[in-house]
Every structure is written in structure tokens, then in C-alpha cells.
Length: 210
Image 1 (cartoon, rainbow, N blue to C red):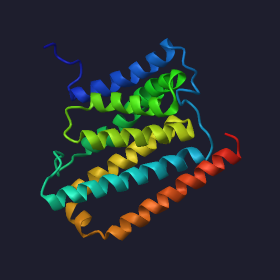
Image 2: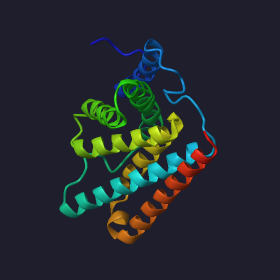
Image 3: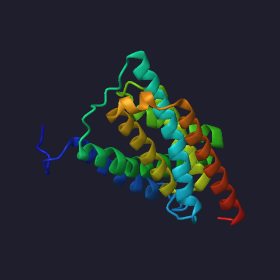
């Protein structure tokens, strides 16, 4: 194998390559920047990202809680380093959302119905992540990220949702005792609050015509 130009993990190169590929695919297919999510749509843009991210994060925490009760742990190390956080919460969401939601879904929605565009983009995302042992969960989170992007029309929303959901998963993995002791009613209240936020932000976006 040829030596890498910089002494960093290969996944950093993959993330950088995915970002570049997303931008090039958007350009090569003549996808308008707005359709690829390169826009800001007011306060609803981050609000929808927080709402969708919190909702997906609650789902991931509940799933991890179930795995803990079943004695089946995720293959994520409990001792997550600052580099892991930077990669999984900052770099990966940006790279993956630009590629999968902006370029892939942005192009799919041109020729497919909303249902099939969301479904196919989630399938492609899941196929790329196939080595991971939680395929079903990967698929449903991909659907969530795509719906967040579709509702807002902005990559910022999808990136925020992705980062928040992964942060919830990593924090739960680091502190499993807290997750086990956490009353389910708390998760329900957080999830309900996120649903309300998504509805309010979506209403505000439509009212302002953005």
C-alpha cells in the first residue's frame, strides 16, 4: 500500500473524499444549490435540526438501553477519545449530509416520488455502512436525517440532526449506568418536546414562506 500523505486515520480521508465527491456530484449533475440544501431558511433551519436530532437521539438512547438490558453491547468503545468525538460528531455529519442528503437525495427527488427518493437514499446510506452490525437502526436514522432535510430544505438541519443523534448515542455508551437508571418517562418527555419543536418550526417556516 502507498503511504498516506498525512499520519491520520484513513477514515479522515474518506470523510474528506466524501465531502468533495458530494460537491462534485452536485456540480456534475447540474443540481441547483438550493435543491442540494445550500441555503439558510431562517430560525426554523436550526430549530428543525435540534428537534429532529433530539427525536432520533431519544430513539437511539432507548435502543441502547434495550441492548444493555439484554446484555448485548454496541461495538463502540466506552473510552471514546476527543478525536472520536470530533470525527463522529463534527466531521462525519458534515461529509455524509453533503453527500447522501445533498447530492444523492437532491438528485433522486428530481425523478422519484418523495417516498422512493427517501427510501432509496436511505438504502444507499445503509449499504455504505453495511459493515456496521446495526443495519436496521442505520436505515431508520438515515430516513430521519432525510426527512429532516426534506422538511427544511437545508443541509444545516440535516447536519445538526445527525450530530445531535450521534452525540446522544456516544454519551449513552460512555455512561451506560445513567441510561439504565433514566426513567422512560424522561425519554418520553424529551421525545414529545422534540416533536413539538419540529411542528412549531415547520409551521413557522411555512408561515414565513421560506
